[in-house]
Length: 129
Image (cartoon, rainbow, N blue to C red; front, top):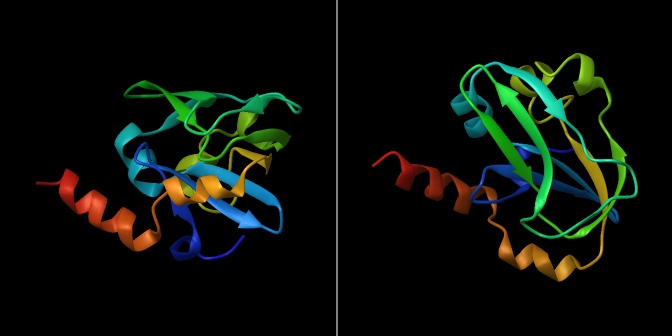
């Protein structure tokens, strides 16, 4: 995985990192800060088909339960099983070890519906006002 400044983001605070034709998905630092300590995650199943902005996984934290939405449509090819026993990885390493799933995107043109790092930063500034 690369630098989070190279990732694409959703308004629901998910990130996606494209590595060849694989999309690695996680939650942004803003989301994990807002949720507090993450205590449980329900991961998707390998082979599941997901739609852009549709549900991918769900998690529980000390503050709330929340869905994680897929930034792109595609087929789940791998999940981060380590999160089942160590959901706190999402808090400590949301851009590295805390990734949720890898999907094989079905339509890379959907990237146009996502924000660049700079656009996401401006979006977050608007939330603080």
